[in-house]
Amino acid sequence: MTMRRLALGAALALPVAALAFPAGAWAHGLVGKGDLPLPKWLFAWAAAVVLVASFVGLAILWATPRLQQVEERRRFALPAPRLLEVIAGALGVAAFAVTVYAGFAGVQVERANLAPTVVFVIFWVGIPFASFLFGDVFRPFNPWLAVGRAVGWAVRKVGGDSVPEPLPYPEKLGHWPAAVGIFLFCWVELVYGDRGDPSQLATMAVVYAAIQLVGMSLFGAEAWSRRGDAFGVAFNLYSRISPLHWRDGALYTRPPLAGLPQMETVSGTVGLVLVMIGTTTFDGFSMGDLWGDVSPHVQDVFEGLGLGPQRALEAAGTVMMLVVILLMSALYRVGIEGMRTIERKRRRSAEELSRSFIHTLVPIALAYVVAHYFSLLVFQSQAMPALLSDPLGDGSDLFGWADKGIDYTIISATGVWYVQVVALVVGHVAGLVLAHDRALALYRRARDATRSQYWMLAVMVGFTSLGLWLLSST
Image (cartoon, rainbow, N blue to C red):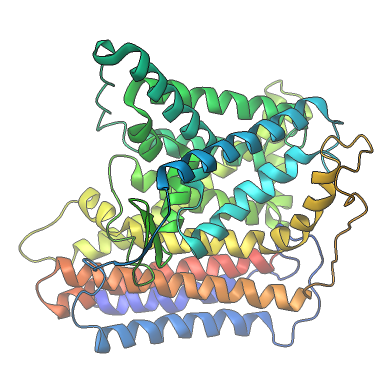
């Protein structure tokens, strides 16, 4: 059997495997799923067909690279960009300070305190949505970057030439601090038993900010924020999907996705993106029946080692999160190794190809965020007016919004499902487009480029089928 048939067979087999699992409520939703107008297996098959059709269309109609080097168009310059940068940074610091203060001083009830909703909904979910739509909106408001820049400016002003230059950022360190940071945050969100405790969230926020300031003091604010700051790096990756690019005090436009082929790929970049995908995948997995069946057995193992029930459950979740990340990594590695088999003369290393194509998974990471957290953002963000009016949960009503509630009828369960499915399919088609364009740039012959992408098609169909199963499983 030829490699082509193997790849296409895998692409067709993966959705079938996904359909073997039961269907039910979706992960991270706040409302139950209603009766859908079409059977869920039909959604999975339709998604697979869309991906295969997109692959064929790309092979026929997209014969030369179009996204590797694009010319951005300057639309307008911001007035007084330095002043705006200072104002935006000050607002970011103020928002951070208010959130931390609320976490420490407010009532220690998750839904009544401002901090948990700001951290887990507005910050962790809202900023990726905004980054995709409007570009890197987090960077100008990044509170620890603003403080790092201000401190650096003050030190240089006072010390002058006697202030030593920052250390060169180690190449081997790369994006690994960011990858570890994203993993730890997701561990807190998905595994840690006291994640809803406002004071503990505030403590962790202060610790994270302190670590960022130490990194900036060693390697410089700009170098550390672009490589070591977990949230700054992750949100910047999402912003590269956007057609809007803010730089040098001006707004530029570019084709959608065009920012991703130019993203910096260093040591740890592959790990970072796979952690972003794997942790969100674990989120869906942990809400399903399969995890409900498996977790008690894993928990029993750790209780047998002397851990209490809560710590044993956390240990089980930690192990399974790592397993899911490794599974996502293995699936990507299959695609990379498959691409290596079509090279006759120059056989690129797996590391080289992994770095060359890792940007193709960023739209999938965003698609998983949209699919898993859309309902959370739509519903729980409506609590913000009331929380802002009573940030400490002590009965205050600063702005007269304390009685604002959540309208759960703003979108139906079926509407949420359609958004989730569309997000998954569009994200994976975008990944195919990026992979095909990069293959055309790497391989001299269009035929070799297309053959190399049989494997990426199988990977994309696998990710899509897995995503749909996680959304529909209970």
